Amino acid sequence: MTNKSHKAVLLARRKRRIRKQIAGTPECPRVSVSRSLKQISAQVIDDTTGRTLAAVSSLGLKVPGGNIEGAKQVGKALAEAAVAKGVTTVCFDRNGRLFHGRVKALADAAREAGLKF
Image: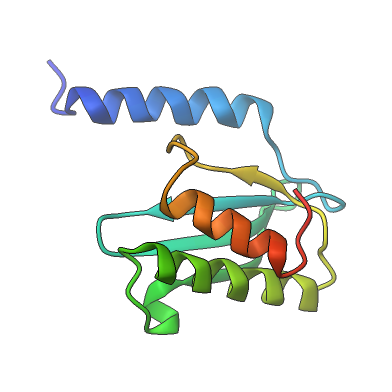
């Protein structure tokens, strides 16, 4: 019998299903979003080389990541870091989470700051 809760099993299934279709390339890297109850983080990843091109978290920015305003600040900082590295077009990996709330706020802020999804 597994120790994982039913919600965790369903989240893992959604993550696998999404990652089968999304892969980051040098021309269009992947933006992976991770969120917990108190923090949110995102990174730009080139899956062909396995390198992280840019990464930002609410812990590093010293902002509360458990609300939408913190997610917007993380999205804006991620976009600025990615554009500084020469990345303008990305594919968005929501990591099995629903595209609303903090995940949507992070994506919208990144779009406004110059990233194209």
